Figure (spheres, rainbow, N blue to C red):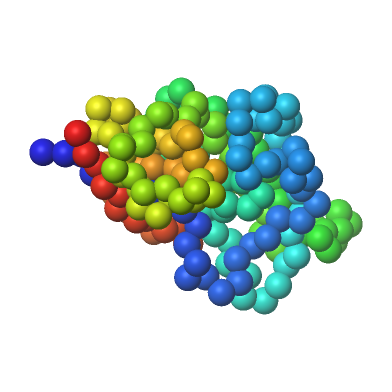
Length: 183
């Protein structure tokens, strides 16, 4: 029997997701490699535009992959070698004298070494974008959270156990899509 894995991403079902302002994309690249992650400060302050109906998502993919604070402990439990850098968000209209009127969400940027796990049958466009993701069972077995190496896209995978743990927490805007696993 093969293991089951799911792609984890920010779902597009939300109509008004939180957007981080004033975060330099040069320092927070979409493709977070070891060098870029090491240069990040442990915790920075960034801002967002408070708005009626704003949805504070549990997974963000812009400017890079981030998880909400409530998922950090779960990710650490599932993959103890994960490292994290934080981004504390404040509303753009924040006034220290008036106090905080809007939520101040905390996000974590996880880093884990990319895993060479693409199966020969994976269908990748010439541009490096995935048409059909297929991973090698022996490369992913025993891992609960991993990042796929060798792609233009930043793709995070979670095991069935991790996916179930995430879903039990009723995440907002976290998408899961099954990927094929082959020997």
